Each structure stands twice: as structure tokens, then as C-alpha cells.
Length: 404
Image (cartoon, rainbow, N blue to C red; front, side, top):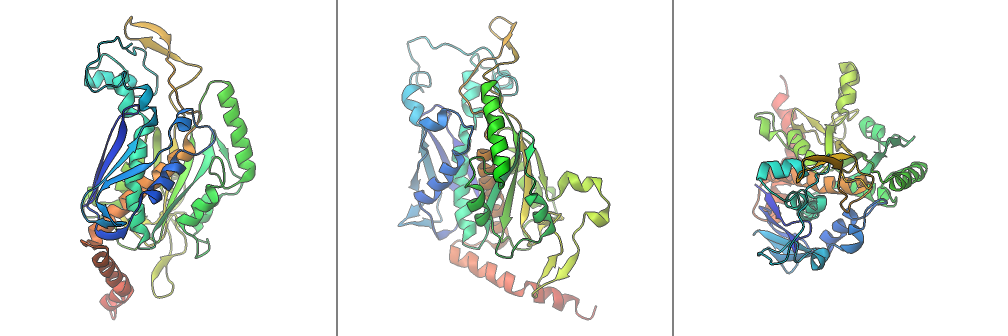
């Protein structure tokens, strides 16, 4: 079993994570993780914080001479802005007066946080509920991503829409039709989407989105959107239908929904399939090159909680960011009177970054079920188990049913 925990506050000294359960001997270095961290910080419409922080990870343990040891991997990302917050976020008591925040932002964790944890300062809710925590998740997910690449599994994403602006070219439909080139991978998808300032696949759509973001900035408002995450090269048989918590689609939905501001997740055709006949929703089974496949991929690579061998397709919706420069109504808790909401440094749109974070979460979910099936204390042992299973899968099914 693999697992990770993150720790740290948005304006604290650092973010940390401990990653546990991966086998030994696969290559891992800080440059690989830093590349993914940089992608998380990109995108038109990000706020001032991204100009302050230049996220770099330091690997503290679990790696020697560029290879994993099979022991816990500890990672740290220092916050550059800590220099300006040492007194406000001091671990020990301070003598000087620190102004308390008393006006919660609608749509954020401010009010529910102080209600649940019995705080008298909203700052205590802000710090851990901030999306800054996702930098540590991207670091942890990058370990999973690097592990999966050893087996030809690649994760990619692109932004489908921002502010209701969609592309005329429906790449999502091409994924369902399963008619992309055999050479298509999640890695190649990223090479294309990362060229765009907002990670879309259509230049005309990019122009329209950037103009709408400019309008949102001018009005002190924010925007949300939808994005698609894809995992290619996934083998048949990850997950199970025997228990609710062993279904890989349930795990994926949980991991993506756990990202800040994500309010909806679907796998494959999802809600679209609910509007059609079964004959228009399910994927016909075929035999191709001595293996089972499907004519289409409306199931998004998962049937009955188990992977089919086709790309996993996940679509998610991110709401507009809760912090507005033109605030809406709230309550001042110190006076219990109606006021306008407080401003906090924030982004205007973060859908491109959210898609990158979702890549890391999908990588983690797939790696979790991959190691559950194939195990191994070293990468060599895992590969041996994986190759043995894959090489015999089709013939085993054919032998089991021959003459029946």
C-alpha cells in the first residue's frame, strides 16, 4: 500500500510530505518533481503569489544516488513568502499585537473552519485550507507519476473550458470514439496543452478565454471551468468490483474531488450517457492484435470498477475562486453585522493549474491500484510480475473458455 501525508500552512515556513510504500530502484530526482511544480504555477490569470514563490523541492530521504530505496521519501518545499510572515505565523507566542481576521469569505472554508475548530481568528482556517497545500500533493504525485512511467503509463490533461468558453474542436469526443492515433499518450497531450497560456488545444478558444479573464480582472471577479485528465498505457485489471472501496473509479473520483474548488467529477461519458440509450452508451467488445479492446471508450477506461486497458478519461469542474476583489455580502463576526467580504491575495482563474494538480492525483490513484495488483519490493520484481501477467492475459482467457 502506498500513502502520503502533507503538512504545512500557506504562509508557514514550508510545505512537507512523506511518501511511503513505493519499491526500490526506480530513478527519481528533484528536477523531475520541480518540472511538475513549475507547471502547477503556470497559466494566465494567476495571482501575485505565483510571482513570489518559485517552488523547488528538496528530497530529504528515501533516495540514494538517484534511485529510490524502498523507504519513506520525505520532501520539502520552502515558502519564499515566509520572510514576510514570520511574526504573523510564529510557532511560539509573540508579544506584539496581531490583528485577527473576523470577516469570512463566501464560498471559502473561513466560516465552517472557525465553527468546527473553535478558532477566534479566521487566519487559522485560511492557512491550511488554501490551495497552496496542493504544491505538496503535486510533489507526492510526481513520485507516483515517475513510477508509472517505468511501465509506459503516462498522465496528461488539458483545459476544456473557462468561463463557459468551449472549443469548436471537440477533443473530448475523439477520446470517447477511441479513434486517436495509436501513438497518442498523456505525455504528448501535455506537450500540446502546455503550449497554451490557459492549457487549451484551440488557439481561437485561447484568445476568447484570455479576453474573458481580462474582463474578470477588470471587474474584480473570478472564473472557473472544466478540464480533462487522461491516463494512457493503463493495463487491464486494476481495481475490483468485490467491495465499494476497491473500485478504481471510486478512488479516482475521491482523489480529484479532494482538490480545492473542484465541485464535479465524471468518468468517461458520465452525465452525457445518462441522456442516451444503452446502445449509444456502451462500448462494443472486439479482438485486436491478440487482445480484447473496445470500438469506443465511453466508459472512460473503467468497467465495473476495473480498468479495461483503454485510456482512463476523467472530466472535472472547478468553481470560480472564492476570493473576489469586488466583494459580495458577508458578516463581521466581531460585530455580528452585515459587511462586504474581505479581500485576500488570490488568483483570478486557476483552472489550468487545477488540471495539473489533477494529473498528480490521478497518477497517485493509478499507482495505488497498480501496486496493489503487481506488488514488489523492488522495481525489478514489480516489472517481472507485470510482464508475466500481461504476456499471458489473453491466452489465459482463451484457454479458460475454449470449447465452452
